[in-house]
Image 1: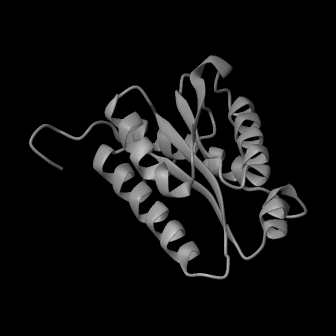
Image 2 (image 1 turned 45 degrees about the vertical axis):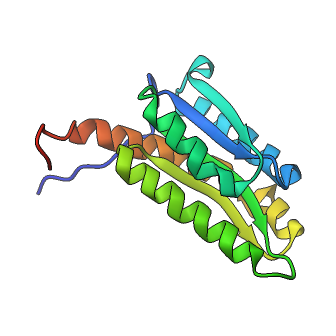
Image 3 (image 1 turned 180 degrees about the vertical axis):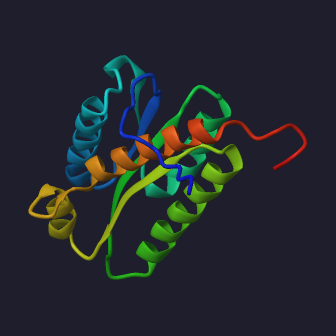
Length: 161
């Protein structure tokens, strides 16, 4: 049986950490954790760029613009969406997830989903380096594994799949 998978060897990969400023108290540690994990995987610091957007809703548009440049191997999307007293949370989190998934598939570019969706800011902080670990690290590892898997799979032949 032949099995394919990605690796955690990120040497030579170019990665963007795409981060939302809203709830920055939780997002900054996610960014730091993702950068640390990329370094542990061998991604050179010169090949890591951090791009900030106002909030999670803006992640898909920025991801699309970055993907269209054709210079990246992966994006790590990082944000913290905290439920409030209105349904706004559901729209923001859902549209961020849907939009990032569409960009990823359209451009055949791994976009790791490091968007925290929590009930409280305390829960977000717990997942941004607190007692629940750092989900930015996990998202960065996913990005490296998917980028290396797609390299192994190779380009899509001209004319379709």
